[in-house]
Length: 174
Image (cartoon, rainbow, N blue to C red; front, side, top):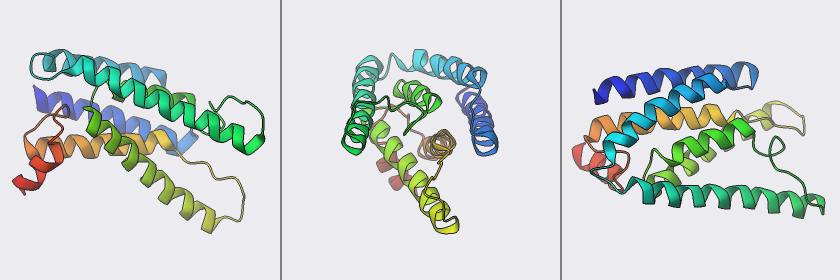
């Protein structure tokens, strides 16, 4: 059943990748499908892992990210401004909130960093190819790509996404 859930999550993530690259939008329905699939995994993981503690800590990390975006906008413009849809999209925040319940705190930080690095690479490539000052990064697509990579790492290591040693286990498996 675990592999079936992972394939369904990968398909839904693939849809997010397609939508975000094509039209820079995300479907709330796909996000709800991901939420449902991840809720089943969350429910099945409650016995083995401290998922509620992970969810609380990851939500705190997300609040720190949003607050830092808020402060960066304040420093840049010298006035308080809402960062949603200026520096980070609403769909991106919802996707990060969804992922807060899917990963251990260490893996959640890795998830954010990996997604951000992929987005930065895209941004630098777009900045070098275009002479525009405005660079739009499909961050939800890169989060979905990272989610798929984490699922592959989970399958290869035989571990869980709630396990902080996921990548250490993967290294030992290879």
